Length: 263
Length: 241
Image (cartoon, rainbow over all chains, first blue to last red; front, top):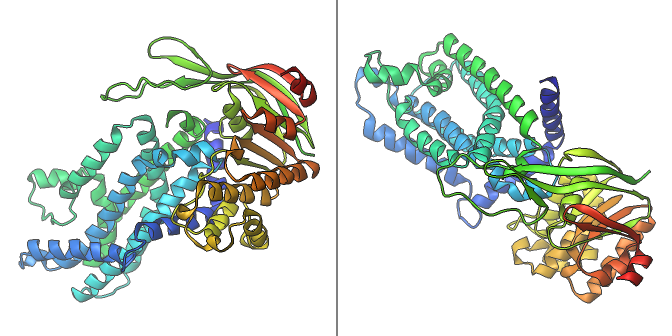
């Protein structure tokens, strides 16, 4: 086990030393996706605003329970889109990078960090839209926002581990690509992204409490909406992050030299 | 000191039956020996390969399709980890396996040189210092600022070769690279390979072009179904073949 973790850490250290490569490649990726368009990556912002605007317009009920509904949706969509895109893209990561993995000796963590960087850049555009909606919705900037910023850092720190996990899943079980992308699409409705839970029990209660994504949304959302620190949700997310990293290191150490034979 | 020591190298990998409901993919790898039945099949891609190369050696790999030439190059490069035996490679290695590999279609030739340089572990100053040399050698001229996707096969091959050899590799691994490019460029490429070898480097070249191997290499390793059929001096091999 010690050798496995050492092998995984060697890969990650080599990947971090090559940060110029994945930063440059991630920038190229974002540029390529919007090349020849007039607005370029601004489409990422427009896409986010269109979604958030639609949800706010359609579901806003105007009663007391959803006074901050715009802020609720803005923060929820920011985190959910980030999680959904990252996980969906991760499952096909090694398969997409097949020619590189079979033709170069770049450490696998370069591909992982390239995707993490790309996801962070995309989320950066959505974040601009989110802050705009928050300010327009009348949510005051407070010190509690620091907790939200810390929550975002925690999510960013968890991302590479989640990418590693789902990338190996996709490489060894190709069908999981479709399972995961369907689950993530459904997950948007099963997670309190645009609905609010007011403690009424029932099915909503199950989807709220037993859904790990809820807590990753709440650690960003709660400090902004209620000015309080959701300590339990933070602890859960930190524990989930550590668990994901432990599994990811084992997978990376054990299978990083094998993955070239399965894709 | 630049050197390659390969001792009793074997590469065996399992053909995995993926957990899927889809119709089984019955395609099999093109090379090596297939052993086992049903769910556990193993491919012996290389079996007991041993040889040593010292500075200045230019080794040609020959053998039928699927004999293990490309696999051996990929083991030397570090893409495949050997199952048993040892591979010791001293020196900075670069490889030319697939012309378009590592190049981004949408990016310009110039940007691609930067990206390839970064992947080889060079910093921006080192890349800038070699930029003009790469562009000049590739003979791409003003095309260097156009997207890579606008290049012809020959132009892409020239850029790939220029980048791989301008970054001063001590060991260069090549797989059938010379098919592209016009005769004039091929001469130039051959000269550069000689220069590289003279600078106390090692070249390993897999090819079916025996004329090219006779001109370029001083040793020939003949592979058959993953095993060494013979290791010859190029002159001996040229007269016997």
